[in-house]
Length: 244
Ligand SMILES: [Zn+2]
Image: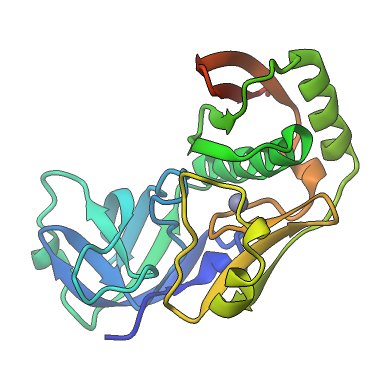
């Protein structure tokens, strides 16, 4: 089985795509390509709908990476909403329209891009990350206190600078010979598949990341440092909110 083509890696602004069912069962549906981001790297999985050829709209409650032993990190399961009898609705080979809940995803993209800027402002290793539609939080491995006003001002400056956000691919070997690219202690890039995706924000931030981002930092809009707390003796937690 060839892996699911993750269309959002090339264009995070795609809201829907036409796809073919390659697996359908109680755990959900796997498609040959998808716009759904599967939970990973701290970012929540997308929700949305699969629209059948007959026009039936099936609710997708979550998207997860496949747990099959032969699955690649790209294989995405569109998780059924409880009560929907998916196997009877969708058979292998059927064509569907996959549509994400765009309002929710755009908030993930704004928050996710903001967390990269936060890495550039704080410049410490990350030891935990969660990106949802309501908030983003990053845990930094550090003992020094963080000043909320300074962090807020640093973020605002980088958002206003309208810096392009782009992605590129490097080989496993290139990443292994540049270990300083990895800024997260809690999430490891998927090695063993030949290539790793890097996310670049101008000359401000560069690190392995498979998530979804806005195309320019000003599209993050109004972001607010809601809270900075001492999570443990060696960890400072920063919580972001969108102000609109
Ligand atoms: Zn990212």
